[in-house]
Structure formats: C-alpha cells, structure tokens
Image (cartoon, rainbow, N blue to C red; front, side):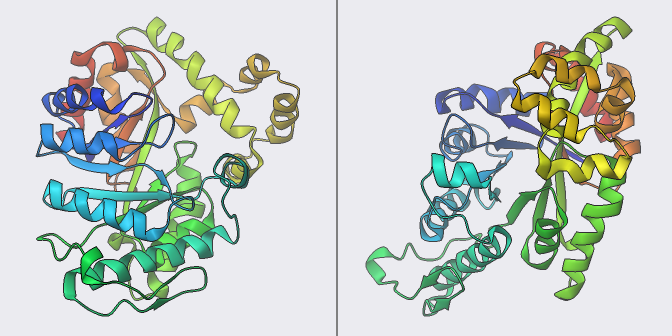
Length: 338
C-alpha cells in the first residue's frame, strides 16, 4: 500500500520544501488539490525537486477547462516527470461550476466520460500522428496542425483518475479510468456495498476488471501519543464529518450505516449552527468513518481496514501530531510498508 502526501492550501513556491520532506519521510506520492491555488503549478516545482515521487492532482476541476488545455498541461507534466504524473479529474458541484466558474453544468457523469475520451484522442494524435477526429456528445476536436502539436513523448500513457462519491461516477471509473479517488467521507460498508461493486460493474461492461482501476483515498486520522491526545484530535474531525454528512449528495454514506441524521444536519447547516452539528457525530461514527488510535496503532489499523480495497492512501488530519510531529508520520509510513 502506497502513502501519498497531500499538498493543499499553500502557494506553489512552498512545494519544493514540502516535496523534500515528503520524500524524506517515506511518502510515495505528492498530490495537489484545487482549492485556493492552481493545482498544476506545485507539481512542476515538486517534480523538479524530487524526481522519484509520483505526482498527481487530487483533483483538478475538469469542466471549466477545455480538454485541449488539460491535455497540453498533462503532456508537459508527463514529459517533465518521466511518466510519473497522474491526472486526477473531478466534476465539482453545480453551484461552483455555474456560479464560481461561470461554465456549463449538464449531465456531469456523461460529460466527464466524454472529456476523458477526448483527452485520449488528443494524446493519441500527438503521440502517433493520427488525425484528430473526435466527435463526442459534448466535445468535438477536429483540428490539429503541426504548429500546435507538441509531438510524442517517452511516456505517453497518462493515467487518468476521477473522484466521486456515488455509483454513477464509480461505475464510469470502472469503464474508462485508470484510477478512482474515493471521497474521504466513506465507510468500509459503503465501499463494499456501493463503490467497489459499481466500479466492478463498469469495468466488466468494458472487458476490464476491478484490478484495472487503482483506488485511492485520504483517511480521517485521529491520533496522538496518548489517549488524551487522541480524544483531542477527534474534535475537528467530528466537525468535518458533520459538514460532509449535512450535504444531501453524501446521504448514501449515512444510509449504508443506518445513520438517520442527514436531514437534521442539513437543517442545522441552513441555520448556520455549525458548532452544534458536531454534537450529533458520535465516537462510533468517527471510528467508522476514520481511523482512531495512538500513533503505533494507525498503520496496522489502516492495513487491516482497507486490505486490497484501496492501493494508495493519504492522511486527512486537522491539526494533531501527524501535522506537527514528523517522527509520528515516519512511524505510520514505516508500519504501512511492513
């Protein structure tokens, strides 16, 4: 099982130091997210600093960018990293696509599938000098002149991952994707009953298997060197779980475990009662959504819980020792590698 460092919420110039530290501690990959800063630029910095790390977006929002734009950036990153770039795409939600990005929201699962097929058609044209003749439901690419063609690269198979929660995107990942970013708000029951069966169904419909899709996730971790530190670390995670659980699109995760608090949390969020929402999240819920325990228990607990369900993990921490104590991180990474 590989462990990945998640770089988010910082400008690109800090990526060099973060990549050095990630490599020193024993991480296998360096992932960025599209939040306050561009997700691609830190990967350029990290890739030039640490040539052995896998580099990926987890995720970049697809629809505001033309597939041609993402194809060029990804091609450059694949060239720069010697084939270690993993393109992670996401749909975001309607409000952000239409109001924050002022772009089109329409049939997101079908549109993202079309987007991925368009990317591969563009890359094939560049690598093999095949005519660009992609005519999809949402995207059409029929012009590529030599002046704009970057030409072939040594590692042209750019892996495409997507992120999702429900069965629609999970199934589509099985059909056409190389990997799937499982949302951190999940349980093993939800993985076993919804996500993994949907990926398998999609894969088998296209002559593939579940093993053809690498599963990746970041895990809520509440840990410390003592039980009191563990208890303290649970508070912010409880708040974050309440936030996710209040969102109707994540309701299926609650339903899988029989947690009938979604409507109440959603109503409280509408009233701005954010602090009180965390009171509805029990210790048992935190332990089922995340991993809870002292530092020496975290690595073994991750391996026991996830087994072959996922192949790459990251740590979703909000404060606590995994953000402040490099030795604690190194111990967990060592335990995962044992």
